[in-house]
Amino acid sequence: MPLEPLPIGATPALDDSAAAPPAALAGLSKEDLEDRLDRAGDRLRRLQPALYAESRQALLIVLQARDAGGKDGVVRHVIGKFNPMGVAITSFKVPTPLEQAHDFLWRVHAAMPPKGMVGVFNRSHYEDVLVVRVHHLVPERVWRPRYDQINGFERFLTGNGVTILKFLLHVSREEQRERLLARLDDPEKNWKFNANDLKERERWDDYTRAYADALARTNTEWARWYVVPADRKRARDVLVAEAVADALERMHPAFPSAPPEAAALRAMLQKQ
Ligand code: ATP
Image (cartoon, rainbow, N blue to C red; front, side, top):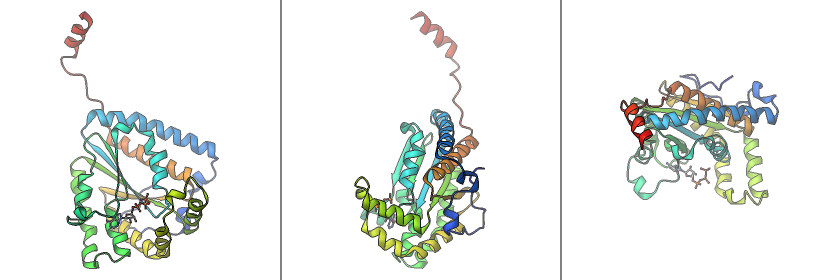
């Protein structure tokens, strides 16, 4: 069963049960999940070269999550299946003074994948209706109109050859606690620990509301949201990889045909 996009008009229930893998995956062994991921990876590897060679359209994958939600894992295990030459990954951090001096979509538009490429946003313009809302970084009269502004922007992009997939990697509060603890306990993960993550965790319910509203209001026919149950890492990767492979198939990327002078060129090369 593929991961279904959030139904249009629906507000997602971002509770603990939505973080558990679907029944069809919950019963699978680690090996079975790895097989599924390998098969999805084969599809990604097969489709991407045609997208690149054709250079007529682009795919944008937006990754949003709470801290320790698994964005880095998806980049490694799913996006890592692609040929890196055809992928552009952008991480959106706190805006620089220059970025702040512009409208909130300025830096986002500049990071759009050109035709032929897969673009990945690790965080995105959605931070401007999430962290910005939760921390009151701008007044409501500024952030609220952004839902419509985002919808218009994404519609403009899709009208210009960009297919947009938006994933919320949804973890439960308990799973986030475990992952943050692992960052403290595991020397190879210490570098990822950020004391600020604990402050953000205190605002769990505020973020839940902000995410639910953002998804409900920006889940459009042209740029759908997927809520990915992300408590089990391998199941999460399978769901994202299969959804991306399905989307790429729907894009029907095709290798350009040989140039009309191919026969003449072949004859010349054979003589040389
Ligand atoms: P990851 O993104 O992988 O979790 P991180 O949280 O360690 O990594 P940081 O260097 O902390 O990465 O940068 C991300 C921070 O930037 C987040 O706290 C995020 O909320 C913040 N941020 C991103 N976009 C904006 C924005 N438009 N306004 C304010 N803060 C933003």
